[in-house]
Amino acid sequence: MRALLTSALVAASLMLGGCGLRPLYANGSKGAVAQVLADVDVAPIEGHEGWLVRNALRDRLQATQGGEGAGKRLRLDVRLEDSIIGFGVRADDTVTRERRTLRARYQLVDSASGAVLLDATAAQDAGIDVVGSEYATIAAESTALERLASGVADQIVARLAVYANRGGGQPGAVLAPPVSVPAPAGQ
Image (cartoon, rainbow, N blue to C red; front, side):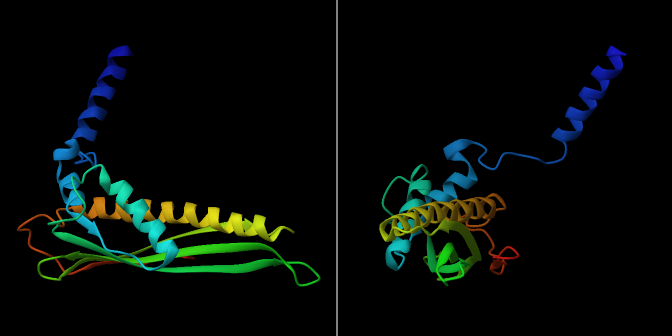
């Protein structure tokens, strides 16, 4: 029985090794993903929410970047849409709950040629309780925006990493047409 179990474990490990599964960030800072991410300069983004998203993106890319975008081969252009919708309404028509949604359409652009390498979207939303204090509601909306900016930045960097892992953004790589990723359903 023990020999059968050992044989099954060995067979399973051999099958998993042969399936082509490999870590996204293989080889650490010398890997293909880290090198492509290090070559990304985040263009300025309009508005307060843009400032938050850009800083979050730069924080996430900073681990692989050596400088402030000088000489970067790739540019990340981001356009944001921020909306707040009231949906919990009392009998006296006062809103009790809001949904704040932050959507980003982003493009990874080759700085030299201007070619769009990746065109995709990211979105997050958060529920906000509206209370009697206007200050508390504004603070909750602001906190939600900070969380949303962080979440959108996480989605963008993860998508850039997947793109880089598949060979995109490498110097001298034959560029495929832009990859367009639709927004998740219901967002």
